[in-house]
Length: 126
Image (tube, rainbow, N blue to C red; front, side):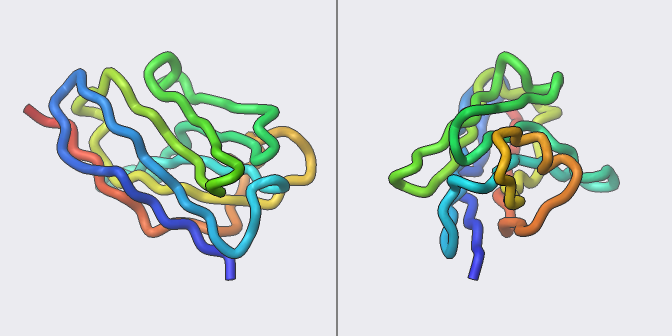
């Protein structure tokens, strides 16, 4: 059974940092695109970043470019999202997601997702 479990959310002050983790089980990352998404109340879930399990490609939406870094640890079967320079508007529930991708592009996940994690809450507030 494919499963994703996020962790690392919490309360942080503006300008602070957090690192989110997404542990995959039931599959290996190699042939999957993994993405991070953010959900805030009354808004659509927003794609933030993705990485291909091969590690060959990453992608960032403009709103997080230069502040967030996505990476994957193949041995740990885990994808990370390092978030620096956090702003109040970064507050939300963060989800990781996976979709099978035998190419090298990760952006396919912006068009469709096979598996979602349960989410982890990030609150940026003073």
